[in-house]
Length: 363
Ligand code: KG4
Ligand code: ZN
Image (cartoon, rainbow, N blue to C red; front, side, top):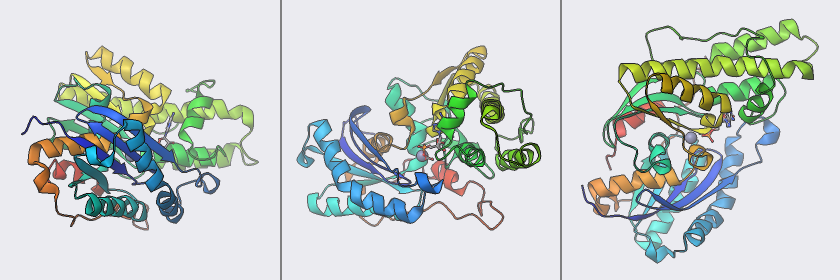
């Protein structure tokens, strides 16, 4: 392991955010994120539109990241790019842009797993964060718990068997007519509601597993809405509905995380990914962690949502471990999230997340 500090230009295009950042070690010199708004009218990310929007945004976003850092490409030591998991068309834009830039500049390129980025994003918020720690990655695409001993040793403790928590927020928000993405809207309305007004299921809550399941909640909400509000949900019922849905999701996330923290005697818990913006999750996780003497690290929103700074940070550690010479080959490829089977489940449960535990920091 070298003690050298590298300046890395990182690119992230795995879903609907076109992002680029410059990091030097654990210091973020710039972090540019362009959120695609084109998907709002469709109630979810449309893959083909996402790829086209990435194509339009990538060059200006990368240029902006260099400008914000006050650096030229000649002052960069290495490039980094998210290669998996994600939407294939979206990943390809970032991967091919990085390869093109590498051919022109002769810089090495570090391929990075997006989930690893989320896991280690706590180090951007708190550079003194010590191993080991427990990481809850909770976003629109992922819900998984990892025990993290160092950059090479990640153990996947459990992950969702069907929908991710953010997906549950988004799908239920859509049933309630709240638009996309629905998490922030549910969070806002829930603040005025009673979380005990409606009883919704908390799947696998007391089962001896660190896995999650959120698709039953969505089905329960749909059934309840059809029975109780056949004419459509009245606006004055929304706060209680949102508070009750949010409580069901947050209960499970907090319960499983604290259970794992106890089992592994974790002193630190990192909560990352878009859903960690949820105000109730932040409050309840901090309260529960305090009761067991653990500290919660909640990266700021710009490090929680899909961003390139987290990709640069992981790349930097890989460079220190393997050296830049290990990243001269441009043979790496984009690897998409496995498609779901007709039953709505991934062919292999959480195959995407599992990659993080097996990839480690290998080149
Ligand atoms: O990490 P992210 O930007 O992209 C993915 O990798 O999915 O996460 C986006 C997800 C969406 O599902 C969105 O509804 C959810 O994060 N989200 C929230 C909140 N803010 C964003 N969910 C609940 N409460 C929030 N305040
Ligand atoms: Zn993500």
